[in-house]
Image (tube, rainbow, N blue to C red):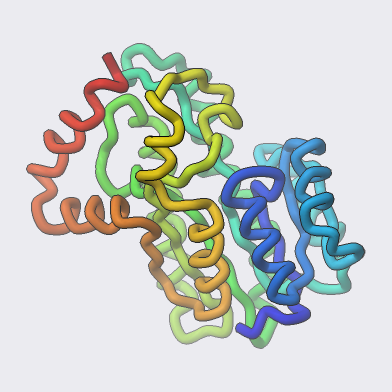
Length: 265
């Protein structure tokens, strides 16, 4: 897809990777509808973009199905059409084993990460399927490839997004709508703070240096919109985890558990 002049909806557009995806798409000549629960985050995105009427902002909680179902009409009113949807919005929970997580904490993560993605996908699918060319990109996580102790409910939500999106890829094989699933590894964003999680991960600069930048993650996500590539891995860590999960799944579980032990103790 040539994204110049295309109208692309991006969830999570008020911070982190989603914000960078919005900025990258606008820089390439697209029109963008940025969706986020945070009005202040969307205001920051708009200020950074300086894109005028090529950017519309929509303060919507993606777990509110009625509000999400009204989005296609709102975006069409702002831009005249919709050509693509990029689902980036997501949260993590505190680093705790399942036994210590409340049902409410687990449900919150599932509601945002899985049901939020289902809500937006279902809302826009009829529009996208009617076009001669369209794109749907769902961002999951390397945490949906193998289990990460302390983030088991998060991983389950992202694994659900993985299978949901792969089902959509199969259903649209040979059709104009191209569907992609994206697996980021560690990205240098404040997903913990944006998720309401307080956790000291050590020296911030050292940790960030080991991660993929949000700008690079956004570049690869935008590339998925352009190429329709069905499966995208972001970062050396995601590629390593993918390889471990495929080649030696039984050994991958204790390997990752050992690496995560310091965060769950």
